[in-house]
Length: 131
Image (cartoon, rainbow, N blue to C red; front, side):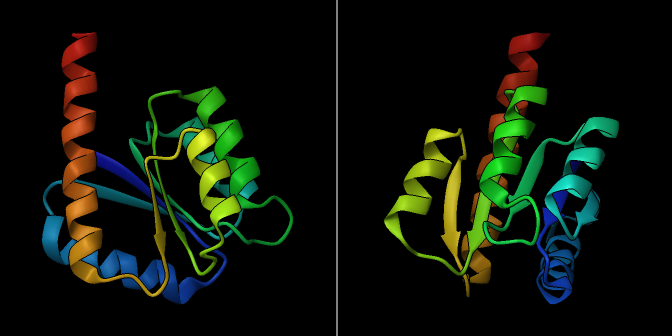
């Protein structure tokens, strides 16, 4: 079972991701959602989150600040940026902070599914390495 946190200030994005992930990985995932960076950090601290979908622009604490703090909590957490901003500087900073992928909205459903499958493989390898 993989714990996935969906973080975006637009509920419709969370709802869309929830639908896609439940439809394709229902038996393999437990989904959590957050509408802000602080809420996402709270969930990441209290649950063992494996994979995070993170928006960049959110009120208060933005996604980049949230990623930095999440990586301090759990360096192995897999961060997938899902943002409407396709500016190179955001992508570069996200990757420098340890994000795994930077996807731009609107994103193709098949790309989401492949990215999640690839993330599952990384989580599995990390768990084998710790065993």
